Amino acid sequence: MIKKSWNKMSAGVFVGLIGGLIGFIFYGAYYSISHNVDFMDFVNRVFIGNKILRSPILSLSILFNLIPFYAFLNKKYYKGARGIMLSIFIYAIVIVYYRFFT
Image 1 (cartoon, rainbow, N blue to C red):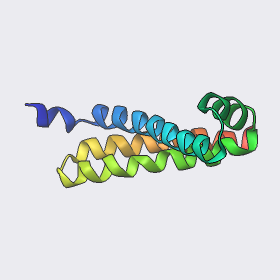
Image 2 (image 1 turned 90 degrees about the vertical axis):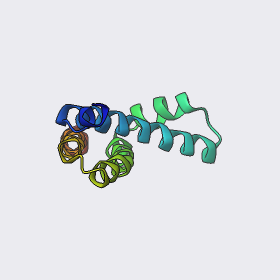
Image 3 (image 1 turned 135 degrees about the vertical axis):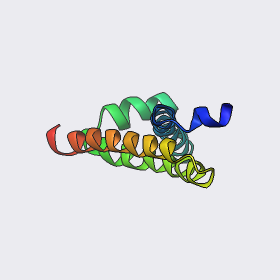
Image 4 (image 1 turned 45 degrees about the horizontal axis):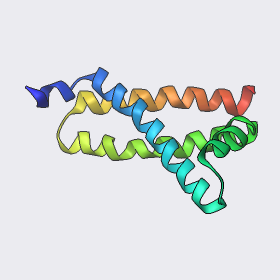
């Protein structure tokens, strides 16, 4: 019963959206440690304050979605994997917006 609940497109979209957020947190933690700044300083000055770096940071953040995507494929949860791909396309629209329209 639990296995089939992950094989839904809505579960995949949820995992993909959360995966992008987790990727952002991992990248922010890495940046904070390597540049010796606070995480909130990274968010405020680097991500929000710098329009040029928004799209590359988001692009790196959604790379984290490769992990659950391949995990879903290995478990043969194809509908869940489609949901993760849909969330990546949603992030791609946001990235294109930040890249060209801000």
